[in-house]
Length: 287
Length: 286
Picture 1 (cartoon, chains in turn orange, cyan):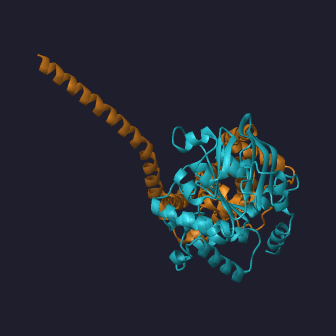
Picture 2 (tube, one colour; picture 1 turned 180 degrees about the vertical axis):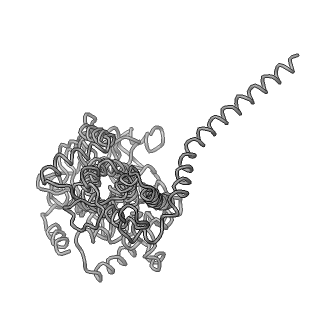
């Protein structure tokens, strides 16, 4: 009697354990599965259109098959460079300020504001830049697009820079200051150098994030079906081109949109792999 | 580099401290015969916010000798040591009263740049901290390079000289390009000493330099301290009383921020005049 009751309890416990294990497993799969599905879908629909022409040709008019998105790929790179010019200096210097200077109270305020900025929907920055730049200079431009993307980069880079700089052991700062090295030189040559991989990682992650942004570009960079080497003119961007092609009613445009999405995802995937390699090396050297 | 040499010159020619010592009498300086002084600490008090870490300490530190500061944890040893090159100021909210004179110059005068003080008064820390992004060679020369020395020949000479003085040259001369962190713990600490020596300070402060090292590495550092005192004034904080007894000429016993007793190490350890010192040294507390 006693024995069987114990056995029952044992079984019930085993059953509960299995149930919860399965539950967590299912949750994990449901997180990973969409990524796999999306990637599979992109491959099926886009792979056939990703060819040499895609990377070398301009878009063809509706109806004529072939063509590529070289202008959008180059445009996206231009926008990333412009955004970096805005986002990297401000983000990195701001992160250094938060970690090394300022008062505790002021800094927690700044930190909070940076987190709020991080949560602002990206289209808002498109609207803001439209109001401040596009209307004033009477035209869409690569500059406006780069500015909108750069603003999005700032809080991302700022927070990661701050975190990795705070991770640098205080002993290095002390050792450098004790040699009579000025504070700013200590920060640049010792602290930031020690944290450089982390800072680069933060920059890369921010670039990966804005590389796929569409909304802030809608009324800033605007998009362009042709070559444009004048940064004060509208410029094409991969996500914008995908957006335009995907909502158009033509089958060959849809195929091009799939191909563009595939290229974009692979690009961002590569950046993330690079980040993994960098962070793994960092873990090894600090160990 | 020129500026470095100039500051050194201007300091060594500064005032006749020896004479002044005689006037002050014998209460802090034993054996006043001809003891040139490096530091004169006068009525020094230091606060961290509301907390008073150092309470009215007056102490003279002799040149070309090893002075050790001993006392139980939290007694202000490290603060007193760090006040000698203004490193304690890195903690926000510090306040100071009194004066620290280095060869007659007040380190806390308003026009004194802490960086200049630290170039004259080098420091070695408890935990060895070679810069992880730099090679052994770069670690040694960083202080000179970041203070504007470009002459590669000069840097190489100073590199070898510093490593030799730190008794590390023979062990690393073929590996100067390897990361500083690839060395063993004791070697890393000697690398840090070489790094401090490379900027040619007048004083070297050591904050428990051996507490993370094994006995063999400790013996090497102690031997090094003994050799270095021919050219440098050394102040060392230690938890290890045998070490204070072995390496130092003078010993200061600090308790609750006050200087309880100061004198020649032999006297402090064999015939202390204050019962608190005796209790601490014989292990009755601390």
